[in-house]
Image 1 (cartoon, helix red, strand yellow):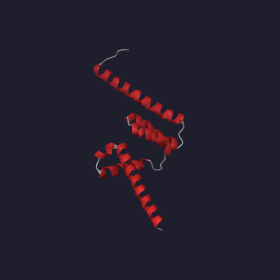
Image 2 (tube, helix red, strand yellow):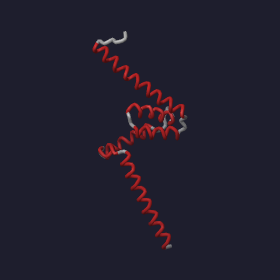
Image 3 (cartoon, rainbow, N blue to C red):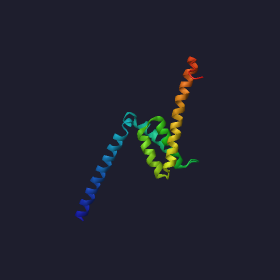
Image 4 (cartoon, rainbow, N blue to C red):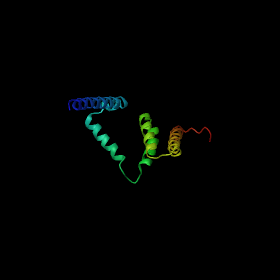
Length: 128
């Protein structure tokens, strides 16, 4: 019995150490959350989780959208996480490539849009 209690105590300490390491890893992975008060983090995480609940859009499609959004907003950590999740939910390499291509197209279009606006404002027509 004493050996069992000692083993359980050791397992509890090891579990706490693993949890502490996981918490530390999470903080290192997302250092920006250290500047957001706990109340606001809770609100954000609740909202974030809500967006991935069941809806008319299946989870794989949500992850493909998230890949494109991650690229559009320049969030490398988001991109890695959503790539993993997209694969987990059955996205093919072709579907992932399609989402990336769409993000590339929108990014290119945003450059054209900005230069069109500037050209109109400055009345510049280089190649008309």
